Amino acid sequence: MIREIPNLKSFGPIAAIFIVLLILPPIIPRFYTYLLASILVTGLLAMSLNMVLGHGMIFQFHHGVFYGVGAYAVALIVTKTSLPAWVGFAAGPIMAAVVGLLIGWFCVRLSRLYFGMLQISLGSLLYVIVFRWYDFTGGDDGIYGIPMPSIISSSKSSYYFILIIVTISLTLLYLILKSPFGATLEAIRDNPQRCEAVGVNVRRHQLGAIVVATFFAGIAGVLFVVLENFVHPDLLFWVLSLEIFIMCLLGGWFTFAGPMLGAAIMVALRTFVGIYTEYWTLILGVILILLIFFLPEGVMGYFLEKVSPQSTKARERTNE
Amino acid sequence: MLKVEGVDKSFGEFMAVNSADLAVGKGELVAVIGPNGAGKTTLFNLISGQLKPDRGKVTFMDEDITNLPPYQICKKGIARSFQIVNIFPRLTVFRNVQVAVISQQRKSNTLFHPAQSMAVEETERILESLGLIDKAWNTAGSLSHGDQRVLEIAIALGNDPKLLVLDEPTAGMSPEETGATMDLIKGLADKRGLTILFCEHDMDVVFSIAQSIMVMHQGRTLIQGKPEDVRRNEEVVQAYLGGE
Image (cartoon, rainbow over all chains, first blue to last red; front, side, top):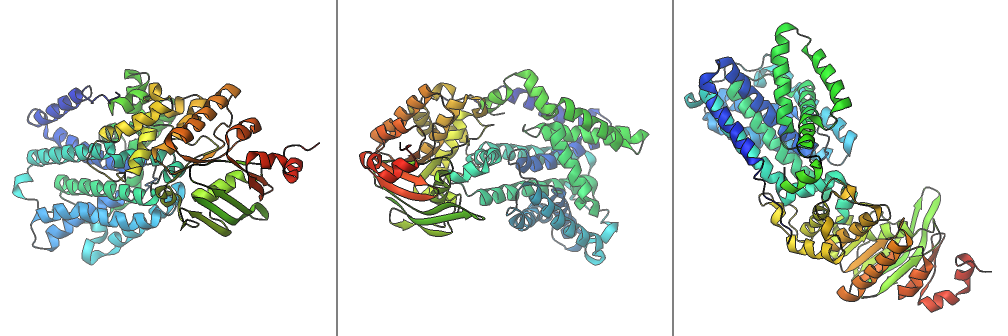
């Protein structure tokens, strides 16, 4: 009798955006191609965080660590071994997920803020190791000039590679969120106690979500190396984790695509305002204050609310 | 079916439950009554695993479930509702129940299958039998208090339990809503052959539908017996029913 309406309405805009992203590079300056790729990579990172943050209410305060682990896995395999780069590409997300499992295993015992605090501690530990271990990771010099396979080494081909991988990743993330696993995760977000009472092993489920999210953060890390050809310990620094956290809030953490929008806003701000002043975070601060007062659901959340007043209801129904 | 023997639970100095006993037979409708603070909710939390008893034993279908976590107790076949509304407020009514059904079918970890096409019939059947089908696509948090209480029961039914534990299912309801909900519970017991353990303040309701009544007072079990025996018991009359 009741069937959920398939999500055809939002398929149109998504296809349109994809086609625009596909045809843009030849007609825009190279710098903008780079900027778009940068937004896609950062956006994937933010969306992987939001899988546990917005959909699971797990306070993953140091998500950047897994981005860094993914990036360093590629960098180290390419520069220190004779294995092909593609092995590094596969190792990135896997290493990130393994580290995610280890750190998550300790953290899920704690709830909310305490979870976040412990994760910052454990993540910072990893940061210090990477920062100090000159022989292996290059320490605070990082590793520069990482050679990429020739097929994706030009700026255009790396852009298309990134676009394709990000599209596949987001499709997978979307499917996972709409699966029983994702539905249960959202139920845990709303009410962990009740979820346990309907037979869900809450801690194990949260750990599973963390592993999935860190896997995708690892993919973003790999794409970072494809784009920039270098790694630096800053990738694991807590400031970056805070930035992607803000991207989720800015874009709308109860929406699927919100964090991508948040990433676009942040990257654009940093790039364009950063030309005029190094204090671009000042502008960001003002925007955040306005956001808290006027758009508590984030930019995307506000937008969806405008499109359909009963957004929460409609969102569930159309599976946004 | 369910047996609680000599269970204690204290919070600091305060003995919330003090050697309580309870027996629930298959197919029975059992009520726990007692004044506020008698330890009814604590007792229910001890049964369903939200709290661990300091002493004593809880057995279900001849199996010791005393120290199991809530999710395992649920898998054994005990589902419960809560005294304070305890639902998934941002999800739809449909999804609220569906999550329980999916959990019952052990499919909570399925990754690449759309949830919207799973467990649809079972969920619809439950919503229909509790009269919530028209509100299936509302956000649960937007329902009226009375409807949220019914949704509580619907979520518990989603687990297809052998024993349903309802902690004051009519708390905060109007008299009409209370009547309707009680009819519903009675109907569940009759039609589905469910075993139900519940607590309730309205004495008329309790004595009219319960087959067995357990009286709690200051954490202790005063008596458990048939309604007419309980009514005649002097200790109960003095402690609770307001002996003149």
